[in-house]
Image (cartoon, rainbow, N blue to C red; front, side, top):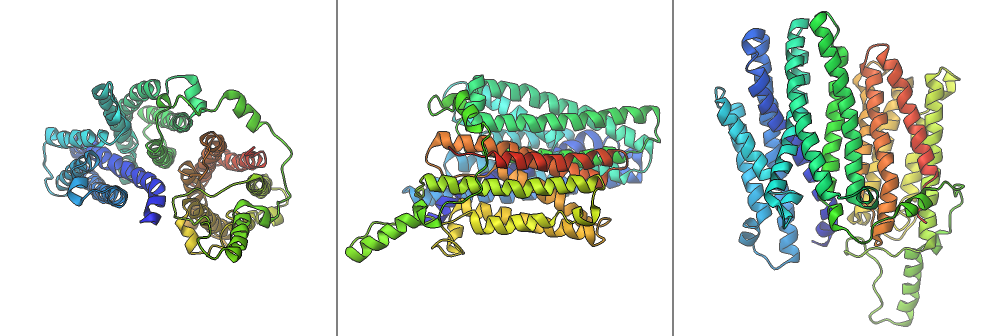
Length: 551
C-alpha cells in the first residue's frame, strides 16, 4: 500500500490524461457522426457509408477505453482511501468522485450502445448522451470543489471540454474521412464542414479558457509565480500552435473551393500533428488537476526577481562532487556507524516508498546540476550534428548523430539517481518504488529506443519505412511525459523554479518531434522547412540544459 500511495500522484495524472483523450475522442466521434458523417453519407455514396461505419468504430472503441480508464481511476482512488482512511467499500463508492465516475461510465456505456448497436439513433438522443457525459466529467474538475460560484464555473468547465471534444476529439475521424475520399469535391465538403465545427470548438475553448484563466489564475504574478500558472502558460503555447495549424488547413480548404484538384496531403499531415499536440495538451490539462489553482496560493509564490536570478546564465559545472558526500550515502554511513555503537533502535534511513522525501544537501544539488549540464552537452552535440547533416556537411560522420543519444542514455542511467543501483545502495527493482526514479528510467528507455531506430533509419535503409516515425513519436512522447514529471522536493518555491526550466524543455521537445514528423510526411517544399526546425529545437534544449541551476 505504501508503494501505491507514493505512486498515486503520478499514476492519477497519467490516468486522467488518458481519460481526457478517450472522452474527447468518444464525444468528438459522436459529434462528427451527427454533424458531418451522416449528413454527407448520401452525397458521398459508398464512401459515405464507409465513413459512417468507421466513425462509429472510432467513437465506440474510444468509449470502451473511457470506461476502462474511468474504472481504473475509481479503483486507484478508492484503494488509496481505503488504505489511508478508515473507510469501507460502500463509503468509497458513495463518495462524490466515485458517483461522478459511475455516471461517466454509464454515459460511456450508452455511447458504446449508440455506436455499435442503434445505427439509426436520433440526433437529439445522441447529443443528450454527449451532454450527460460532459455533466459527469465536469463534476470531477476544480470547479466542483469551489465554495463560491460553483454552478457558473461548472458550465464554463463543460463548455471547455465540449470545445476540446468538437475540435481535437473530432480530428481522428476527420483524418480517417479524408483518407477514404479520393476527389477534390468530397475533400472540400468534408474540410469545409469540419472547419465550421472546429470554429465552434475553438470559440468554446477561447471563451471558457479566458474565463477560467481569470478566475483560477487571477493576476500576472499567478502565471509565473505558481505551478498552476506555468502549466496554463504551457497549454496556451500549445493552443497557439494548434490554431496556427488549423488556420493553415482552413486556407487549404478555401483553395479547394477554387481548385478541387488541389493536393490535400498537407491537410492530412497537419491534422495528424494537431492530434499529437492536442493529446499532449490533454496531459498538460491532467497535470493541472494535481495542483491548486493559482488564486488559492497566496504564499510560497516565486517572485520575478527570483526567476531572473535563477535563470541568469553561468558557466556550466562539468565536475561532479564525490558520491560519498551526497546526503543519502552520508546519512547511510552515519547510520551504519551508529548501528555498530547502538544495536537497538537505530534511526531509520530513507526508503523509497516510505512516503518521506529524501534528504538533500549542497552536493546533491551540485550533482543534479552536473547531470543536467553534461546532458546539455550531449543534446547540443546531437543538435549541431543533425543540423550539419541537414546542411549536407561532413555527411559520412554527421549522419551518425543518433548514436549520441546512446551515450546520453548510458550517462542518465548511471548518474540520474545516485541513491540506487549501480551507484547507490538500493537495488534495481526496489528503486521502482520511487516515482522520480520510475520517470527517469522511462526517459532512459525512450532515449535508447528512438536513438537506435533513428540511427537505423539514417544508415540502415529504413528511411522509407514506418520505422522512421519512431524518432518523432518518441521525441514528442518524451515532451509530453516531461510535462507530467514530478520532483520530490520539499521546498515548494524550489520545485516551481525547477518546473519553470522543465516546461520550455518539454515544449521544445514536442515541437521537435512533430516538426520531424512533418519532414517525413509532407511533400516538398514543406518537408524541407520542417527539416530545419527540429535540429534547432534540440540545440535550444541543449543550451537550456547547460544553463540549468537549482541554486
